Image (cartoon, rainbow, N blue to C red; front, side):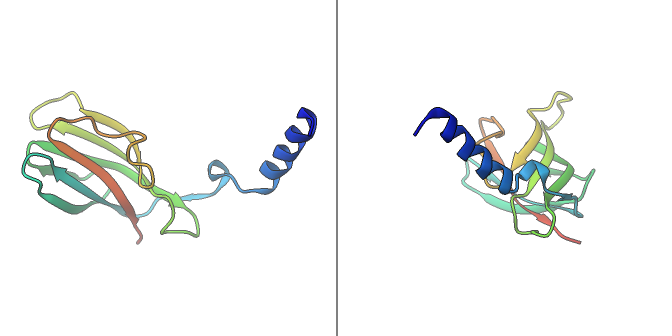
Length: 122
């Protein structure tokens, strides 16, 4: 198969498959997160609404928003989080965390792990 034919075949596949970036997104009422204290082994699930901050041991987690593909609330959720050490103004983490790929943009903290489980639908 020539390079031109391979390129044409890939183009057709992409033209007829929906891209996540092109899907409508929904921003629901909040997010369900899981946190783990790597020292004690304690795991805690908790929810946040946009703008809410939760203190977990020595870190504070704040939710900006949580989104998922429209029509699929159990789909690939992603949330904008700000995570700080208690008392620090500079965040340890700021950005989007993706439920299906938590290591893609993860919190780099010596004691805590935090990851997105799903968005909370209204």
